[in-house]
Image (tube, rainbow, N blue to C red; front, side, top):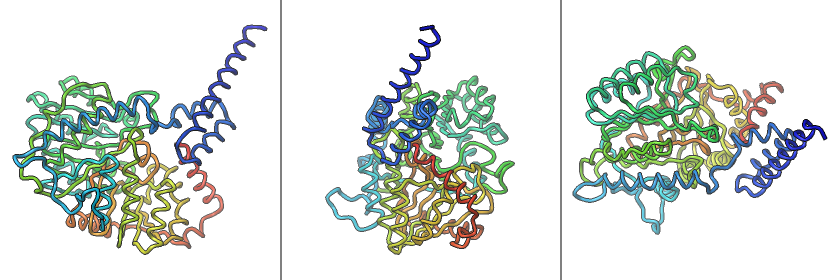
Length: 487
């Protein structure tokens, strides 16, 4: 047998062995059977392409493994360090609130059920925010952020999915260079893959000035699992988080959109500690060993003072898809309304069922998503779910004034969820995400009033709209929906 034939036989044997290994792994997996079947079909139909795709985006990192153990160890250490620093003369700075129910106490409200579920699935304890400001426009948020950056005395920690290079980033990096020269510790984490399209000149200049700038998850095997969190922590006293990344388009819509509608917040007080814990954990997972506990200010005020806030994180490496599960609990517990804003809508089956069951039971379930897309595939995939939603009684709005990027959930008058998590399977199951569950009627009212203002520039999807779709459009929507099962 000639060498070429031998090589061909060896390659073929390796492919067969790899196929057998992947099929065995899928057959013994603990994921949704429809996901397993989808992967099996793809691999059997196109073996080589299927194996490559499975290596990059198909492996189940929620199974116990080295990365998951590493995440849990880093998070446990950071939690203990950060939360032990959040103390006053009266003890731990936890909130005295009706949502903080003992495990053996019956729960009656949506807030109590959500709080318990979040706690059970790894959420931080409910902590007080001394001040809370919710932003609905990038201009307001970045104005305040620039002022806080300029006033920083000890430390600035920044984490964003996307760090662009434009007018805003030039102003931000200019301030950061000045702060480094003044002796302020500056650390920046940006998601490596998501920020690839943008130049890095400013970040390189910032690093040369003395800041520590780290690309997040720059590993081939983690290509499918992104750090979608956004946060800015100044002096351990102030935290910003929500939907906005670092770029001018989050203020004015850029060249693509007339309007960019987003939601972000600024909080102060002990609630900063969980965000610093998440930053410290992500920092260590990206090869850095610095102790960030010195970046946290000691909490001011008395235990129980402030707005009750519970911070919740989930990713492909956490034990539960905790944010998704909290959404499910909210849908099942709400007595009056669940109003959802998300730019994308590609839910898994439990979440879709939860929305439909809540609406069928009389809850006012509304979904608002963007009507002007930035990504066509998830935009069209969302349309494949509209018939199911409308039949169950869910109201679907499409924001037509520009791009809607807000990620909020308003539940009764009890709580608002504001953060980074979209209502699509990538955010719900795969990405690193963080949300703040705010148990405060004033914040809930603020979010509900903004939702109603946004409805004024929306079109509402009707059964007649769906009936008017052509066969080609229905096929396009269904085909765009199919890849959501290969996750």
